[in-house]
Length: 122
Length: 108
Image (cartoon, rainbow over all chains, first blue to last red; front, side, top):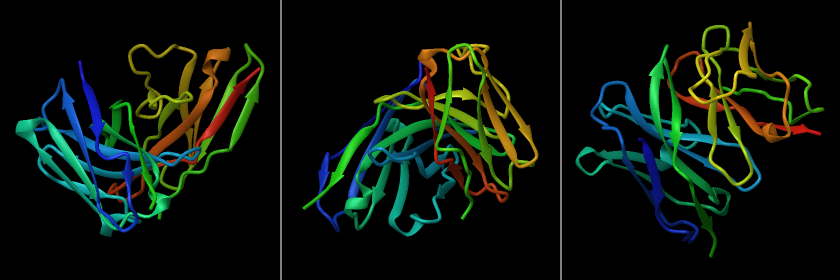
């Protein structure tokens, strides 16, 4: 079965770079139409789509965060890494990674990790 | 940037039909997807490609679309259906994706 798990720091200082790793099993990121994405959710607030990487290394980013985000994959390790530069307390959120599949031009998430809470504070 | 608009809250009595709407200008051409998120849990996909139910999702969940508005309907709502519901879709270019602001469903 498909599983995903996020890992990374629970506390980050403002202006630092946040690095999160998604380790997955049950699928290969070299399979056509497959992707892995990142979504976050500040406490008590809505989900926010952040970034997505496809099997062919195509990458998409949220326009509002594009300059601060980098998504990469290591197919041999079954991992996807998200880096966010210059973090601020407003970046405090639960960060989820999720398996993506494509249909009719839309990449949607059908399996999610449990999420990891990241707090940005000095 | 593209936005999907949902009502903040919907309330129904058990057994009634709950309807949650999602408005977006690209919805006539782009399918809506729906996620259920219960407190403290990761989201779960309940409707994909506008009206299809993933395996394991009860038949009381259904999706529809009319122009710029997509609707998630829960017929015979149960207390266990209380959750936050999010619509999800893409803008006209298909270059990035967005979630709606979420709707808190109360069944009591």
